[in-house]
Image (spheres, rainbow, N blue to C red):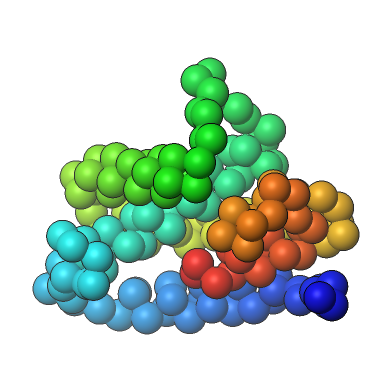
Length: 150
């Protein structure tokens, strides 16, 4: 199998996040509450989830913050369950926060995330991309995964 050629997505991530911000800045209160394909999640819940991902990424990467409780993920299903639990906890909590505040947090911290990503060497080692069956990945591949989420 041929090795993957680097795909640099920093500018693409900034562009897609700006377009998302512009779109969400124009929607109505009713639009924020519209349900999506994920059971029980609204448009606002999806953006809340993105804010969670951004804040955790900045905390772990830029700020080198490690939560006191270590998480053991022995199997792929453990990872899936962990990620789903994180998302459900955050989204549940953020249902008490206004759409305008969630959008503001997204805007402010996606810029910080972009700056952090630009500070990284794309060829350094990063956390693995589990769905690609990698325990260690290059930064560029991890950031491409991040782009695919946004």
